[in-house]
Amino acid sequence: MNPQAYTRKQMGDACEMLVAAEMTLAGIPAMKMPDNWPCYDVIAQPKDGGPPQRISVKARTFKRGGETFVDYWGKDQFDWLAIVLLPGADQPTRRTFIVPRGVADARTPVRKTKEANDHYWRLDRVADVLPEFEDNYCLSMTGRNSK
Image 1 (cartoon, one colour):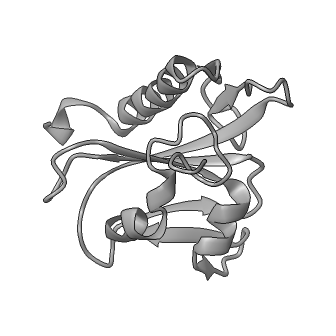
Image 2: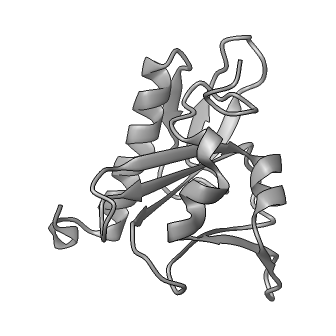
């Protein structure tokens, strides 16, 4: 896929719609929030009738190396973090990880900044740190492969 074929905004919007569509097809109705909605990008309604779940979507083209990150602000309010890694470098397919906020906070390093704590992962380490949450469109708190 040619990264010059679309803008960063178009890539982000497409990945937000992708996450909402995959969740809906997995039985969790979801929709993309309007542009510039604060703190999260997708809202989803769990099967059990619990409260709606707020999902922050972060999309990146996959690269290797220590200078490529996916991150979020500690002050942002959301319930789930969806990381969409688009094909690039030696990763030929798209990969999506949907992680409960508590797990994301616990498994990521934190950088102190002026605004808030910045939580981050290197792109080439996401699959190693969060393997059980790949394709977790059903919003399992323990990951898609749990019983």
